[in-house]
Amino acid sequence: MTHLHQGALVTKIHPVIAYRGQLDLFQCELVEAQVVFEQVGEEALILKLEEIAAFARALMVQEVKESPFQWTTLIGHTPEELRERSHHPEKYFGIEHTPLSYTHGLVVAKLQHLRAKSREVELYANRAFTNEVGECTRTDLIQPLNRLSSAFYILACEVRGRKNGGKPKQPEKRVPLGVSNRHIHLSKNDLLVLFGENYALTHQKELTQPGQFAAQETVTLVGPKGTLEKVRILGPVREDTQIEISATDCYKLGIKPVIRNSGQHAGTPGLKVIGPQGNVTLKSGVMVASRHLHLTLEQAAEWSLKDGDKVRVHIQSTRPMIFEEVLIRANDHCQKEMHLDLDEANAALIDGQSQGVLMEV
Image (cartoon, rainbow, N blue to C red; front, side, top):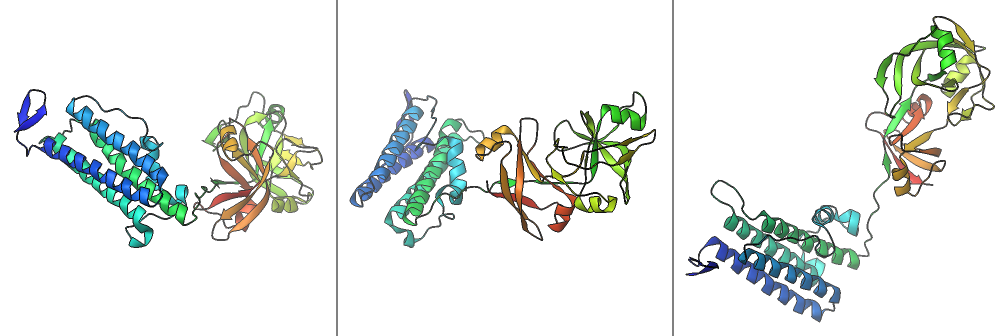
């Protein structure tokens, strides 16, 4: 018999006693690994293992005292960070997942051994603290033991990455793509002229960008050489009417394609807009919209960008291409999305699986 807790005697084959024995053995193997690391000059790893040894001792003490085990970080990482780094070694250490191999050397082999041993200790803990119906009484011990194996795997990846000259791979700056067909934004006065007094647009569907919607209503555009019918109105109303069409549309209408940022009407052509109740002749406001990328201010800052910057974007599609001079439009009232007109989308054969990847400012 032996003491389980104060005043409680159990046989030495009790599952908790077996767990304690495995935790003791684990700490012995930590010390053996430190001896090896000292011989090969891995001073930083010795300190990491010293921290893990203290962690293991605290696990033992809090279990014996029947007190909750509390922790925030291990080898400098939170539980969530340990899991993230162990699942994505290429991202953080510049290497693929680390299999067992003698080619990785003695240090990595020792770390992998400790990883396996920590997993064995976790299994013993599960047997010790899980009852017949599957309820665990000490999840505060099981969870840190689970993260302990992640810590050893991370250390092994760090060693491999350092020796192989690996550098953390920066995540790609991916953006979803939105294809913008011809449309018109109306001022309130022009809306009333085209559709009648006190008229309000009818929602058809919400658009990706917050607060914007496609209306059920359409108009006809008339240029010097041609006509475009059923051009969708986008709401809400704006201060000035603006028409965004493709270069192909411009040629059909007989007007010069002029590329502009939204709201920049100077130097743009005009045309006639026909509605069910009237028509409006615009002197300007017809444009081929600059290809642009919507980002929140936080997203832009994360990528070291600001409103008005221009970037290159590699379109990943069945017909990949690179778009230059993509305008960054950053504010806190938008959603991440790159907007292309129909000509650009067709040129790259964009479909629902296509994405954009930022290349540089």
